[in-house]
Image (cartoon, rainbow, N blue to C red; front, side, top):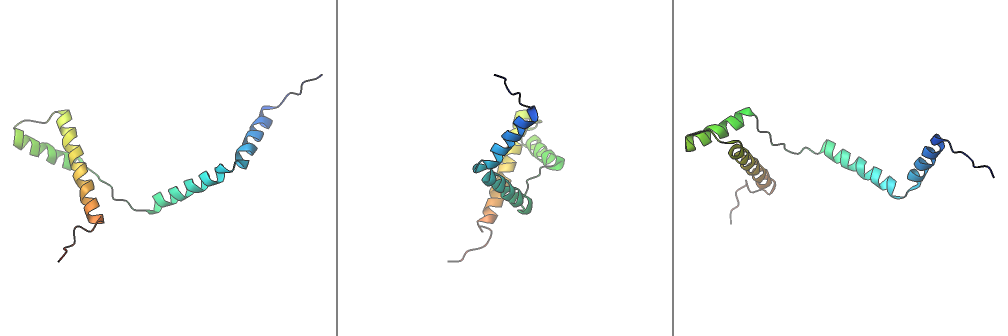
Length: 102
């Protein structure tokens, strides 16, 4: 009995055909497209700390402690600044910037 040899390209074609027939694939592709569209068209505020911001953090630390911050101290202060900015944007999103009269 003679064994049939399969060509590598025919194996990849059957793999691709099986993938396309898989019922979950169209939903994954559609989900990816929707996520990409949402990400492309949804303007999210970005927190940017440039060299001037970091220099200001270093200067404040130096005025307070009369020395330059260590790498860990500076990283902690930068992280705190980012958290403050996130809280600020969340407060704006909740409308906490508008005065409420009772």
